[in-house]
Length: 141
Image: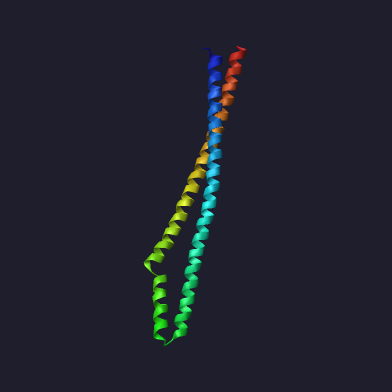
């Protein structure tokens, strides 16, 4: 195999590598789009949960304030307010926030992977240009 064939083979190899990176970028962008949709849905779920908690708290706080001396209604409002501030509610809130944080981290990783693949494509293009120049020099000799 002479120098011309070796250079041609190297060019094809780098072109294939660049093509693989472009396919990977396209797949990562689709993944990124899905992650953004998941992040939006997670935010909506978290917002609904917090809104529900706030509404229930306000409702039972008003009931607690209104009932005054009515022992049963006041104790019921107190129990519900305790439930709203319970460990389970706090744990649910933390789980929702953790899920949102995991999605954010995955978005960052995916964006970094896209940037890395774009840099690889740039490197491949530069190497391909150099190989074409070398091949042209071999032809002119």
